[in-house]
Length: 324
Length: 252
Image (cartoon, rainbow over all chains, first blue to last red; front, side):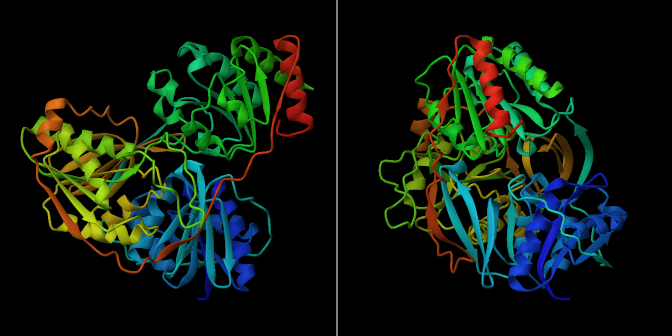
C-alpha cells in the first residue's frame, strides 16, 4: 500500500464537504510532485458511495472505514480509524474545518508526529512538506517543516481550489476494530436560517460599532440576502461585546479568521485585531463616515458615507444587477 | 474536585507584530504580554465549578519562559489556587512537544477536568488540547461554549460550521474553551495581594527535538493601494461600487 499522500475526506450527515474536494485536489498535486499515489480516507456509516466523487478530484484509491459506530463524528473512534489508515502514509492532509481541527491533532499525537494547522499553501520540497500558515491571525506568516511520519497538515477551507481531475478511484474497505467511544454525540443543532458559515462564505457583509444597535443589522442581512446563498453576515468584536451579535459571528484575532472573495466592512473602524482576521480576503470594501478610519488603508474600495444611507442603496443596486 | 487550566502567555491582541531582521521570529521587546484570551475562559469556568462545588483546587499550568509567571499570577489573582510553570525558554513550533510535556505534568496530578483555550492567539495552532487528551488517553471536546457537569460526566456544547454539537464525555476530560462560554472576571485588588502568596512551582524542562520547525517567518503580503469611490450621493456611490465589483474585481 504505497500512500505518498493520504487525504482525510470529511463527510457530515452522509455528504462530503466541499473542503474535502479542495484537499483531494491539493493532495493530487502534492502526490504528483513526488511521483506517487494520492489516496483518500472516508470514515462513517455507509460512505463507500462517496469514493467515486473523490476519484473525480484525483484520488487514485479511496480507503473506506465503515461502521455503524462511526455514523456521527466520534472523535476518538475517528482518530483511531484515520490513524490506522495513515500510519504508513508519508503525508496526511485534511481540511482545517471544525472536524479537521478537532481530529487531525489527535491522529498526529497517536502516530507521534507533528502537524501544521490552518495552512494556506502546501508544497513538497523533495520529500518534505512545506506548510505556509498565518500566525497572530494573519499579522505574520510562517513556513513549517515537519520531521515526522506522516507529515500532517490541515488546509484552510476556501483557500485551495477544488478541480476535477478525473481518475477512476478504486475503493478499498479497511476494517478497524473499534473500541468504545469516550465521547458521544447527543444532539446536532443546526443554526436557524440557512446562511453559510463565516469560514465557508464567499461574501461577508460585516458590521461594527457604527451599526449602533442589534436591530440595525437588518440592513446588512438584506444586503447578504441580495448577494446570494454564499453570502453571510459577520461582526467586529465591538459589536459582539456590545451583545448585538452572537460571538460566533466575530471576525478577528479572538474571533474567526476569514478568507472570502469579498469582505464588506460597514461601520468598522479597523482595529488591528480585526484587520488581522479579515486581511486575507480577496477584495475588501470599507464603508465608513470617518475618512480617517484605519480600515480604509486595507480596503480595495473605500466609500466615505453614512452606512445607513449607503447599504440600502447597495442592496438595491445588487438586486438590480443580479436580476439582469 | 480538582481541575487544571493549561494557560499560555501571548502578545496582547493590540500588539503590532514586527519580524526580527534575521527572520528568526518576531521582536518581543516592547510587546505587552497577557494571558491568552481563550485560556481566560478556562480559568473562569474552573473557578465557577469550584465555587459551585464549594470544594476543590484550581491549578494553572503554563509552559513558557520565565516571563509567563506574570500571566500565572494574573490567574491566581482571579482566584486560582496554585500555579506551575514548565520553563522551557522561548517558543517552539512543535505542539506535539508541548503537549507531551504538559501531559506528563498533568498525569502527575489528580485532575477531574482540564481546561485550555481553543487555540493560543499567537501561533493559532489549536492542537495542544486534543494532543494532550490523546496522550493521556482521555476524551477532549474542542471549541466549547457551554459545559454542564453531572456526576462523572460533562455535557458540552461545541461550535461547528452552521450549528452546534452537544457532546457527552466521561471525566476526566480536556475541554478547549471558546468565546461565549462565560465572562471572565477581573482580578480584584485583594485577589492580586493574595496571589503573591499563593504557591507557584517552577520546573525547568527540556522539550527535546521538535518534530515541527519554523523554517521561515514573513510579513503578510502587501495589499495594493485601494481607491476611494467618489460620488454626489449614496446612490451614485453604491452604483459605482457595484459596477467595480462586477467589472474589475469580478466578485459579484
